[in-house]
Image (cartoon, rainbow, N blue to C red; front, top):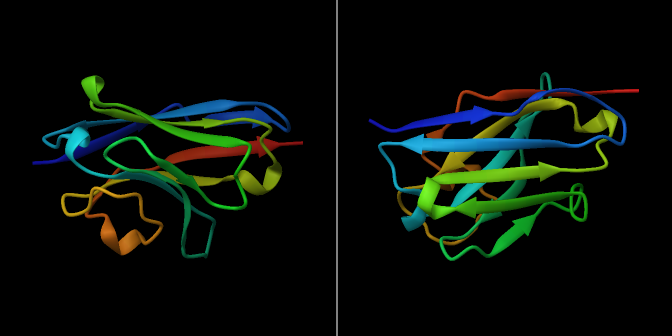
Length: 124
C-alpha cells in the first residue's frame, strides 16, 4: 500500500519561508513524476509545481520565482521550498505521485497517490 507523508507546514509571517517535505512508502518516487497542489477553502485543488522523473521542474505562474520543487530519489522524497510567502499562499498543500506518468504534469487527474495535506498559513 502506498503512503505519502507530508511535513513542514505551519504558520509564518509575510515574506517568510517554509519547506514542505513529502516522503513515500510503498512507492518509488524515482520512477515517476511528483507534484504539489494546494486547496483554498471552498475551491478546487490548484496546481503549484511538478517534477519529472529526471528532475525537470515546472511551476505555476503564481509561485514561479518564489517556490522551488526538488527531489531526492535516494530518500524517496520530494520537497517544496517556499520563499517570500504571501497571505494568498495560505492553503492546504497536498503532495502527489503518479504510477503512470514520468513527466511533470499540472493535471491533478494524472496523479493517483495523494498525501493527507499540510496546512500553510501566512499571516501579516
